[in-house]
Every structure is written in C-alpha cells, then in structure tokens.
Image (cartoon, rainbow, N blue to C red; front, side):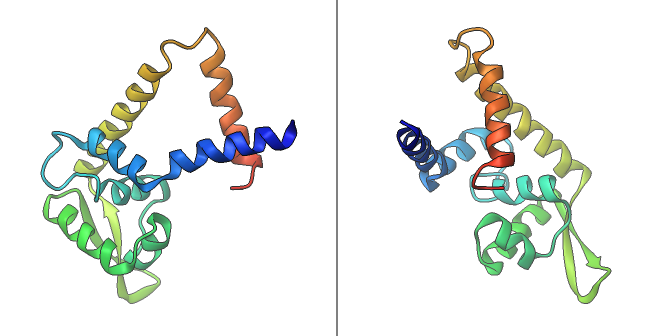
Length: 147
C-alpha cells in the first residue's frame, strides 16, 4: 500500500514537471501581457521574484537553462523595462538581474492569474479538501524528497 502511494505521487509529479505541461501553463498565464512576457521569459521573472537578484549564471541553474539562454531572455525583459542589470557588489566583472517596479507589477499579475487558475480548478472539490491538499503539499515540499 505505501509503495503504491509513492508510485501514484511520482506519476502525478511526472505530469506536473513535464516541460510541455509547464509551457502550456506559462503560455496561458502570459497571454496579453506584452511581446516580451511569454512562456520563455516567465521562468526568469518568476525566479527573480522568488529568489531575488542573481547573475545570469546563478539564475541559469535555478531555471534549468544555460547562461546564454538566460541572457537572451533577460535581454528581452530588459528591453521591455521589466528587469535591469545592476553591478554585482561581490564581482566587478558581473552584473545582477533585478526586477524593476514594472517587473514586480507583472509578476504580481502572473501570480494573481496562477492563483485564480488553481482556485478555479478546485471549485468542484468538497469543502475543506482543497485547504487540506494545500497544507499537505506544503508539508510534502518541506519534508519530502525535494527538501
């Protein structure tokens, strides 16, 4: 029984973590937010909001891209006024990618859209079950194999 639950969770995580699943979600969330905000740049904005200013090299590891991929996407976001490059105080040769005020507003809208999409998908769940799921998922992330 215990092993079966582990397999069920692993299967669900496999679907959740699939690149196509993420790309479809990011595409839906970014619709209408401008040419520079799309399924390719979403992970950069999201990561900067989550972990704060980072170099392109450090951000690459966080979002699963190489440094040049992060740099290309960051350039698009910089041209749109959503991020800026600040000098890295620990390395004069490097710069940090930082969300601008407009970038923070864009991330807030993306998070609002994501929360609404999740809430809508849970509308048919029995009362209390969604809240229990949220608590269990938070605990799983804190204590499970990803911690």
